[in-house]
Length: 111
Length: 113
Image (cartoon, rainbow over all chains, first blue to last red; front, side, top):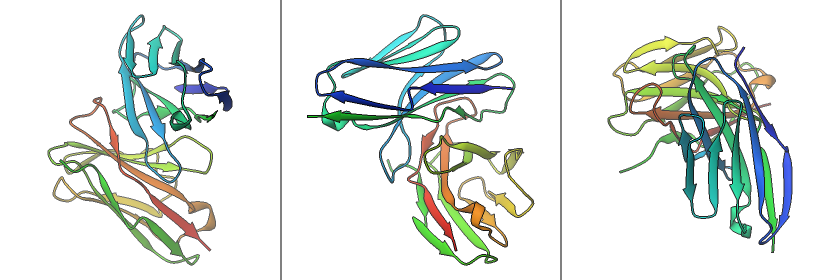
């Protein structure tokens, strides 16, 4: 059964303290790995799509990487406005396009 | 262009009441998905449409849940005889086609009393 697991569940950082969020996946024939950001009371906001192991994408202070078993979201010198829940989701060849989500990592960045 | 919109944003229902949740996808997006998100959890798939065809409804939790997209654009998720366990945020997403990036609406927060 396809499965996505994120760790840690919660992360508290000081402003400027870099860290990484982990997303482990077990998906048959991975066709895409997605990262979303979700603020309280809002829908998930798209950040990145990764398609193959070794691929990396960057946007401002965020960088997403992909291996055959995991994806990492690296946050460099975070700011308080980066505080949110970060969701990882996978799309595999055995389904019709639905995303399998992890439970999310809630990030709090303190000034 | 406008993103995905959903209405109502909040809905309070009495147990046993029927509710209807609406989703307006991004114009031109062929694929439309419904997800259910419990508090503190990631979204869980409910159902998927390609144009007006419902290609996957494996995530619908019971026969009280019904979704339609009659003209291949707006979609409605209907929940009959609501139960307390139906309380959640219902998210709609659309994409150009299945497998492409999905863009989410703000969600409808349903509370069943």
